[in-house]
Image (cartoon, rainbow, N blue to C red):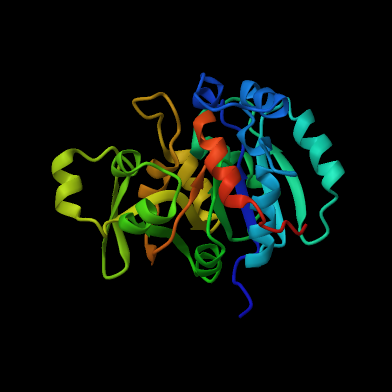
Length: 266
């Protein structure tokens, strides 16, 4: 089936604060350098970088154009993409001048995206191709809701971390709210099959105006969740599957183990 959406915006601008912090893993010199720079998407994993696996999986799902949101100092990305010379999809860079939050990162891709619908994913996560494929069929605004029990089973993320992730509340497939940092009572009430947000969205160009309307959160950042609250109808697509997360140094060994033997085709 031909996907409705063929453009992806990949948020790769983050400061990498948690990745810069010391961990227990023994890293190679190249991995240590990437960790120190905070460039999680450029972390060496086997013979590739994390972004290579992400781009390959996106191309497999039907993406033909990827917009990487990066910092002004993006020489490492530019050099790596020149070495990759991908032919299955076009890769362009969009610069986020300051790390002002995920909504600001999406806004930074506006010129590169134009009026096309697109999906938004995190640069330090590797999402299942089947789930991305479902999202590419979305018409209008949507998000992929990951079943919490499947995340615990199939991801490299500890259950206590997953328990703290934002919960999706929906009625008849339509988003009611995204509950960030749920308390113990909300977690228990939601149950093991609660839907969790992993920042995997499908957007129309309407999101750009929504991003422009919001104010900074209590953290002082422009949050994509706040922009989503400004949208009208947002569909929730439930999905049972895992996500690989590379936000800390201690994640590297397990991600590398799980990706051993995975073919990268760009």
